[in-house]
Image (cartoon, rainbow, N blue to C red):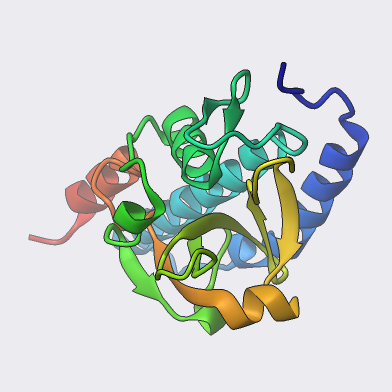
Length: 191
């Protein structure tokens, strides 16, 4: 039976590190005015949505890998992990495979990665055969392979650096990922 993590000390430490490393942009100041305030609100909503994805994903560290797995109780594969996290946090149902996931959202350069972005790798001799969720600070969370568990890895590790295929941003790009923020920005826009 797959193991669901019981030790939360590592989770809490990782969460605190993540929040500290990505909190600075949320503190940015905007100029007064309804459009500026609305824009700031939208940015903060997107930012917190991305943080929520990363924090929820950290709670899955230690879940067993299972090819084709879709739930923590039964085990997760890489795309099952991504799909589960996005479904639970945003309510958005994503495509099932890493190759399909590589076609959604907006392309992002490695230098521009933000928490919540999807990172893709060629690990099975074809492009976009593996996916993880970027956490910030050059780290990502993923379900690596049979016999392993959901874990955090470093993009700068030579293996991941050599197999990196690209990244996609979904938070703030896909419709439905931040509906309340989008609605408030549209409502406050000058006519």
